[in-house]
Length: 240
Image 1 (cartoon, helix red, strand yellow):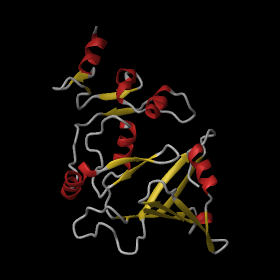
Image 2 (cartoon, helix red, strand yellow; image 1 turned 135 degrees about the vertical axis):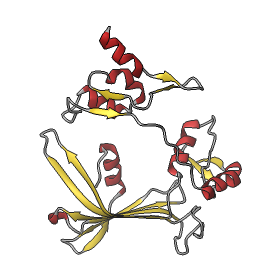
Image 3 (cartoon, helix red, strand yellow; image 1 turned 30 degrees about the vertical axis):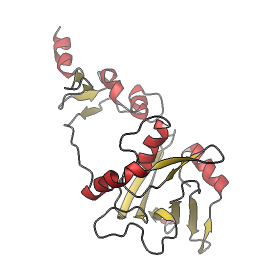
């Protein structure tokens, strides 16, 4: 009975609109994580379950904090209100879909059928991003099945070239020539990979595949990455 009394206050509760929620201050650990599995992405649940070599440590303890909603920038919301009503889905000859008359903001603020899933994806693709983002020392690590850890540090520059809503920034930057977004990354560490770089270019025409280029220090030149290589990367879920 004592154990039940300790667990019951942390059982998911319903919010005012009837949706389940977790009370702030709840601690999730290996003993009670199944109670909160419905709130977890599949990857987190798999880590708790211990299905893979990389898993949650036995003493894991996650404290749930209060929900904090950061409002979207005023100009992005204004663009959504101004332009969303004119956005149209257009079918392509190959059966795919694209957008027509998109100018900025969220294209489908209240996505409905038909093609509701595609509209949700379009909202994600055109989510708000600053026209320029610079990370001077990004880092990330990979862990393989042998528990070997491989870390890289990099410099990243992301630029939105079209459909901008930031104050004082043109909607389309001069000279962008149909480009929507660029993502540039240069490795800083480890030393053997230093100055290796990649550039990804997305276009305003959604039917046009991204272009990607790699700079190889040993060759002192850049080279495009083929569409087939990009498809292989996408299938295997790794970075080139």
